[in-house]
Image (cartoon, rainbow, N blue to C red; front, side, top):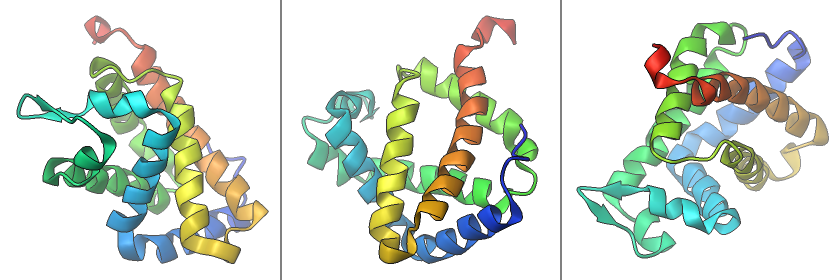
Length: 160
């Protein structure tokens, strides 16, 4: 996984903006998933815990199990930001994450919607500090993460 196309300035923009947003990861993660469910409402039905499905988005977002999922997603973003100089160290993990998402029924196209939702959450969280340069840096970082996840999503689990 190469992110040689990210300049040092872009890496700094990612780190600096994440430092602000990561102060309240649960809030910003909830914003991300609220937006995701607005854009793709059917995704809420992929989440079920203890054999029970959620009847609506708010029920899902307010559940303790889903709160834990939000924390996990934000931890992955945190790891990507922390490894922005060596994302290849996360390649195997992200590939596996892509496989897991396919196994639970996530469509490959939904990765794009997650990226849009991430940018939305960052923009709301950062306000005027979310400049076009910051947006571009995050877009490139997310594209790199998705390349690894997509490889895992496409890979046949029987090939392992």
